[in-house]
Image 1 (cartoon, each protein chain N blue to C red):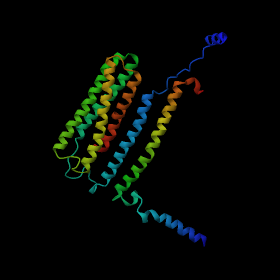
Image 2: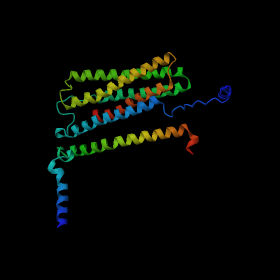
Image 3: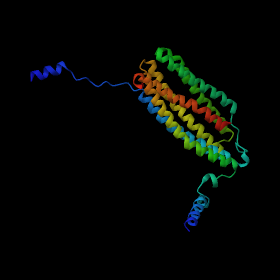
Image 4: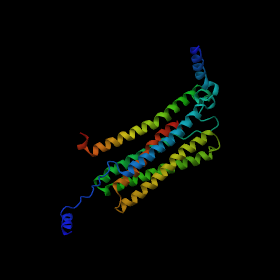
Length: 73
Length: 200
Protein backbone atom coordinates (compact mmCIF):
# COMPACT_ATOMS: atom_id res chain seq x y z
CA UNK A 1 0.00 0.00 0.00
CA UNK A 2 2.25 2.76 -1.18
CA UNK A 3 -0.53 5.39 -1.00
CA UNK A 4 -1.01 4.63 2.71
CA UNK A 5 2.71 5.08 3.28
CA UNK A 6 2.63 8.37 1.35
CA UNK A 7 -0.34 9.56 3.40
CA UNK A 8 1.41 8.69 6.65
CA UNK A 9 4.53 10.52 5.47
CA UNK A 10 2.53 13.66 4.59
CA UNK A 11 0.75 13.54 7.95
CA UNK A 12 4.08 13.22 9.72
CA UNK A 13 5.57 16.19 7.83
CA UNK A 14 2.52 18.37 8.53
CA UNK A 15 2.56 17.50 12.23
CA UNK A 16 6.31 17.78 12.65
CA UNK A 17 6.63 21.54 13.37
CA UNK A 18 4.02 21.29 16.11
CA UNK A 19 5.70 18.25 17.63
CA UNK A 20 9.10 19.90 17.59
CA UNK A 21 7.71 23.30 18.65
CA UNK A 22 10.09 24.73 16.10
CA UNK A 23 7.94 27.53 14.82
CA UNK A 24 8.18 30.71 16.94
CA UNK A 25 4.99 32.09 15.40
CA UNK A 26 3.01 29.00 16.50
CA UNK A 27 4.52 28.34 19.90
CA UNK A 28 6.11 31.45 21.37
CA UNK A 29 3.21 33.82 20.85
CA UNK A 30 1.34 34.31 24.10
CA UNK A 31 -1.69 36.00 22.58
CA UNK A 32 -3.19 37.07 19.25
CA UNK A 33 -1.29 40.39 19.22
CA UNK A 34 2.02 38.56 19.71
CA UNK A 35 1.19 36.11 16.92
CA UNK A 36 0.45 38.99 14.54
CA UNK A 37 3.63 40.79 15.65
CA UNK A 38 5.68 37.66 14.90
CA UNK A 39 4.12 37.34 11.46
CA UNK A 40 4.50 41.03 10.59
CA UNK A 41 8.12 41.28 11.74
CA UNK A 42 9.04 38.02 9.98
CA UNK A 43 7.65 39.40 6.73
CA UNK A 44 9.25 42.80 7.41
CA UNK A 45 12.73 41.35 7.98
CA UNK A 46 12.36 38.95 5.04
CA UNK A 47 11.30 41.46 2.41
CA UNK A 48 13.16 44.58 3.59
CA UNK A 49 16.64 43.47 2.39
CA UNK A 50 15.20 42.37 -0.95
CA UNK A 51 13.51 45.74 -1.38
CA UNK A 52 16.64 47.62 -0.36
CA UNK A 53 18.89 45.75 -2.78
CA UNK A 54 16.36 46.11 -5.59
CA UNK A 55 16.04 49.83 -4.87
CA UNK A 56 19.78 50.43 -4.87
CA UNK A 57 20.27 48.44 -8.08
CA UNK A 58 17.51 50.45 -9.76
CA UNK A 59 19.10 53.70 -8.53
CA UNK A 60 22.54 52.69 -9.84
CA UNK A 61 21.05 51.71 -13.20
CA UNK A 62 19.16 55.00 -13.45
CA UNK A 63 22.27 57.00 -12.51
CA UNK A 64 24.37 55.26 -15.15
CA UNK A 65 21.72 55.83 -17.80
CA UNK A 66 21.39 59.47 -16.82
CA UNK A 67 25.15 59.94 -17.01
CA UNK A 68 25.38 58.37 -20.47
CA UNK A 69 22.15 59.25 -22.29
CA UNK A 70 23.66 58.55 -25.73
CA UNK A 71 24.44 54.92 -24.93
CA UNK A 72 21.04 54.03 -23.52
CA UNK A 73 19.31 54.05 -26.92
CA UNK B 1 66.70 52.36 -34.68
CA UNK B 2 66.26 56.06 -35.44
CA UNK B 3 63.21 55.22 -37.47
CA UNK B 4 61.62 53.49 -34.46
CA UNK B 5 62.15 56.53 -32.24
CA UNK B 6 60.68 58.81 -34.87
CA UNK B 7 57.64 56.58 -35.24
CA UNK B 8 56.95 56.61 -31.50
CA UNK B 9 57.14 60.38 -31.42
CA UNK B 10 54.88 60.74 -34.42
CA UNK B 11 52.19 58.39 -33.08
CA UNK B 12 52.03 58.50 -29.30
CA UNK B 13 50.05 55.77 -27.60
CA UNK B 14 46.83 57.32 -26.32
CA UNK B 15 46.38 57.12 -22.56
CA UNK B 16 43.19 55.45 -21.36
CA UNK B 17 40.52 58.01 -20.55
CA UNK B 18 39.36 57.70 -16.96
CA UNK B 19 35.64 58.29 -16.92
CA UNK B 20 34.02 59.98 -13.97
CA UNK B 21 31.77 57.45 -12.17
CA UNK B 22 28.02 57.96 -12.50
CA UNK B 23 27.78 57.80 -8.71
CA UNK B 24 30.67 59.17 -6.62
CA UNK B 25 32.56 56.35 -4.88
CA UNK B 26 32.07 57.90 -1.45
CA UNK B 27 28.31 58.20 -1.93
CA UNK B 28 28.01 54.61 -3.15
CA UNK B 29 30.04 53.32 -0.20
CA UNK B 30 27.88 55.34 2.20
CA UNK B 31 24.69 53.96 0.65
CA UNK B 32 25.95 50.38 1.09
CA UNK B 33 26.85 51.18 4.70
CA UNK B 34 23.40 52.69 5.26
CA UNK B 35 21.78 49.47 3.98
CA UNK B 36 23.45 47.58 6.83
CA UNK B 37 22.35 50.28 9.27
CA UNK B 38 18.76 50.01 8.09
CA UNK B 39 18.83 46.27 8.80
CA UNK B 40 20.31 46.94 12.23
CA UNK B 41 17.46 49.28 13.15
CA UNK B 42 14.91 46.96 11.52
CA UNK B 43 16.07 44.20 13.88
CA UNK B 44 15.74 46.47 16.90
CA UNK B 45 12.28 47.66 15.86
CA UNK B 46 11.11 44.08 15.21
CA UNK B 47 12.25 42.92 18.63
CA UNK B 48 10.57 45.93 20.21
CA UNK B 49 7.29 45.27 18.39
CA UNK B 50 7.21 41.64 19.56
CA UNK B 51 7.89 42.58 23.18
CA UNK B 52 5.35 45.40 23.01
CA UNK B 53 2.69 43.07 21.56
CA UNK B 54 3.29 40.54 24.33
CA UNK B 55 2.98 43.11 27.16
CA UNK B 56 0.66 41.97 29.99
CA UNK B 57 -2.85 43.22 29.33
CA UNK B 58 -1.71 44.82 26.09
CA UNK B 59 -0.67 47.95 28.04
CA UNK B 60 2.46 49.78 26.86
CA UNK B 61 4.45 51.32 28.51
CA UNK B 62 3.95 48.82 31.35
CA UNK B 63 2.04 50.05 34.39
CA UNK B 64 4.25 51.88 36.87
CA UNK B 65 6.72 52.97 34.20
CA UNK B 66 7.21 56.66 33.27
CA UNK B 67 5.45 57.99 30.16
CA UNK B 68 7.66 59.31 27.38
CA UNK B 69 7.56 63.05 26.51
CA UNK B 70 5.59 62.77 23.27
CA UNK B 71 4.86 66.46 22.61
CA UNK B 72 8.35 67.73 23.43
CA UNK B 73 9.89 65.09 21.21
CA UNK B 74 7.51 66.00 18.38
CA UNK B 75 8.94 69.53 18.56
CA UNK B 76 12.45 68.10 18.53
CA UNK B 77 11.51 65.95 15.53
CA UNK B 78 10.53 69.13 13.69
CA UNK B 79 13.95 70.62 14.44
CA UNK B 80 15.69 67.55 13.04
CA UNK B 81 13.56 67.53 9.87
CA UNK B 82 14.29 71.24 9.37
CA UNK B 83 17.99 70.45 9.73
CA UNK B 84 17.70 67.93 6.89
CA UNK B 85 15.92 70.45 4.68
CA UNK B 86 18.59 73.08 5.36
CA UNK B 87 21.36 70.66 4.43
CA UNK B 88 19.53 69.92 1.19
CA UNK B 89 19.36 73.67 0.50
CA UNK B 90 23.07 73.99 1.33
CA UNK B 91 23.92 71.19 -1.13
CA UNK B 92 21.93 72.92 -3.87
CA UNK B 93 23.61 76.25 -3.18
CA UNK B 94 27.04 74.60 -3.09
CA UNK B 95 26.55 73.47 -6.70
CA UNK B 96 25.97 77.09 -7.77
CA UNK B 97 28.45 78.88 -5.49
CA UNK B 98 30.19 77.09 -2.58
CA UNK B 99 30.33 80.26 -0.49
CA UNK B 100 26.54 80.56 -0.56
CA UNK B 101 26.21 77.20 1.21
CA UNK B 102 27.86 78.38 4.43
CA UNK B 103 24.79 79.78 6.23
CA UNK B 104 22.43 76.92 5.49
CA UNK B 105 25.05 74.30 6.33
CA UNK B 106 25.91 75.94 9.64
CA UNK B 107 22.22 76.25 10.54
CA UNK B 108 21.72 72.58 9.68
CA UNK B 109 24.59 71.53 11.94
CA UNK B 110 23.37 73.73 14.80
CA UNK B 111 19.87 72.27 14.55
CA UNK B 112 21.38 68.78 14.62
CA UNK B 113 23.29 69.72 17.78
CA UNK B 114 20.08 71.12 19.25
CA UNK B 115 18.33 67.81 18.56
CA UNK B 116 21.03 65.79 20.31
CA UNK B 117 21.19 68.25 23.21
CA UNK B 118 17.41 68.16 23.62
CA UNK B 119 17.54 64.36 23.67
CA UNK B 120 20.20 64.55 26.38
CA UNK B 121 17.97 66.77 28.55
CA UNK B 122 15.06 64.39 27.94
CA UNK B 123 17.17 61.41 28.97
CA UNK B 124 18.29 63.18 32.14
CA UNK B 125 14.68 63.83 33.16
CA UNK B 126 13.65 60.22 32.39
CA UNK B 127 16.56 58.87 34.40
CA UNK B 128 15.46 61.18 37.21
CA UNK B 129 11.99 59.60 37.33
CA UNK B 130 13.38 56.07 37.32
CA UNK B 131 13.46 54.95 33.69
CA UNK B 132 16.81 53.22 33.29
CA UNK B 133 18.26 50.45 31.13
CA UNK B 134 17.57 47.97 33.94
CA UNK B 135 14.24 49.27 35.21
CA UNK B 136 12.20 47.33 32.62
CA UNK B 137 12.14 46.14 29.01
CA UNK B 138 10.53 49.51 28.28
CA UNK B 139 13.65 51.32 29.51
CA UNK B 140 16.00 48.84 27.83
CA UNK B 141 14.40 49.23 24.42
CA UNK B 142 14.00 52.99 24.76
CA UNK B 143 17.66 53.64 25.53
CA UNK B 144 18.89 51.02 23.07
CA UNK B 145 16.89 52.26 20.07
CA UNK B 146 16.95 56.00 20.78
CA UNK B 147 20.56 55.79 21.98
CA UNK B 148 21.66 54.02 18.80
CA UNK B 149 20.05 56.77 16.77
CA UNK B 150 21.66 59.48 18.94
CA UNK B 151 25.06 57.85 18.43
CA UNK B 152 24.53 57.96 14.67
CA UNK B 153 23.43 61.59 14.92
CA UNK B 154 26.58 62.55 16.87
CA UNK B 155 28.85 60.80 14.34
CA UNK B 156 27.00 62.47 11.44
CA UNK B 157 27.30 65.91 13.09
CA UNK B 158 31.07 65.40 13.56
CA UNK B 159 31.26 64.37 9.89
CA UNK B 160 29.33 67.47 8.81
CA UNK B 161 31.44 69.72 11.03
CA UNK B 162 34.57 68.39 9.33
CA UNK B 163 33.05 69.17 5.95
CA UNK B 164 32.02 72.64 7.12
CA UNK B 165 35.61 73.41 8.19
CA UNK B 166 36.76 72.29 4.77
CA UNK B 167 34.17 74.61 3.24
CA UNK B 168 35.52 77.55 5.27
CA UNK B 169 39.02 76.75 4.01
CA UNK B 170 37.71 76.57 0.46
CA UNK B 171 38.78 72.93 0.12
CA UNK B 172 35.42 71.16 0.26
CA UNK B 173 34.78 68.83 -2.66
CA UNK B 174 31.25 68.28 -3.92
CA UNK B 175 31.47 64.49 -3.57
CA UNK B 176 32.61 64.76 0.06
CA UNK B 177 29.66 67.00 0.86
CA UNK B 178 27.28 64.58 -0.88
CA UNK B 179 28.66 61.66 1.14
CA UNK B 180 28.19 63.46 4.46
CA UNK B 181 24.75 64.69 3.37
CA UNK B 182 23.56 61.17 2.51
CA UNK B 183 24.45 60.00 6.01
CA UNK B 184 22.67 62.95 7.59
CA UNK B 185 19.55 62.34 5.45
CA UNK B 186 19.54 58.76 6.73
CA UNK B 187 19.71 59.97 10.36
CA UNK B 188 16.95 62.54 9.71
CA UNK B 189 14.57 60.24 7.81
CA UNK B 190 15.01 57.33 10.20
CA UNK B 191 13.96 59.34 13.23
CA UNK B 192 10.22 59.78 12.41
CA UNK B 193 9.87 55.99 12.13
CA UNK B 194 11.58 55.51 15.50
CA UNK B 195 9.44 58.25 17.02
CA UNK B 196 6.21 56.68 15.79
CA UNK B 197 7.29 53.22 16.95
CA UNK B 198 8.82 54.00 20.34
CA UNK B 199 6.98 57.10 21.54
CA UNK B 200 3.43 56.55 20.29
